[in-house]
Image (cartoon, rainbow, N blue to C red; front, top):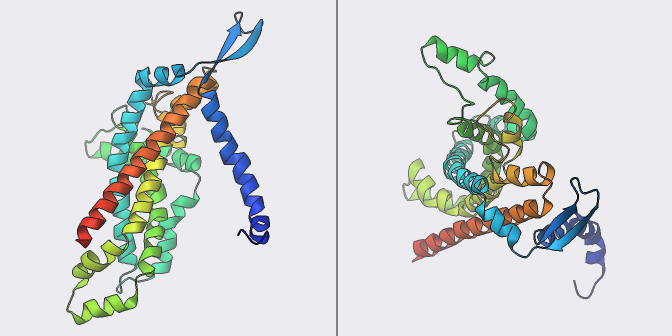
Length: 296
């Protein structure tokens, strides 16, 4: 790389795009999180000026009960939804890569298909299955005497979790399948010679060797959980249980475009990014520690 310009020339389109769409916006957001806008007059008709606010925006964000509640809500969401999704993706990947699997290509495509549907469209489709009077699921449950409101404040979080799980399980499954395909066939042959059955092979060979893929899917899921926006934003139109600050991303969006407070929105965005970084680092640290313990 140091001796030749060709790699830099080939990489330059991506680097330029990455610089202007990722690096510069992040720097601007961090800078704006330390600024506040002062408006003179009732509607700012006498002038608008930006002033340095120090840590005021961060203090205000961390003092905002709605924002803190949204973070705790997403942590609960992540603990339950991510666990269910990763377990489901792992089970599907192991079943499709087993020797007894029939039509694995067809089922891989079928499970991955929901990921190709945009989140907004998927949420609209699922909302018809949640709204009483339109949902065949609600109607069928009413027939057997079970009354449930999927869009109530107590249930809407898990209604969102269902949509996210349905959308991303197939995507995570393909990542795990790619790791499974990289396992040398000699290991399976040696396990078979040693008399290992299917469960022993899964527990002693496949699960330990797909740990990197599992960690990748977990980290992606943690980041995605804190960035949850499209699904609750769309369901907000049909559910009274979703407020404008229901998730951290929705809170930042509300301050930016409803309350016109860019400084506060930027501070919340930085906090969300830091939270995703810390949680991902913790998950990676736990994995590395358990891996070192297993080697000992």
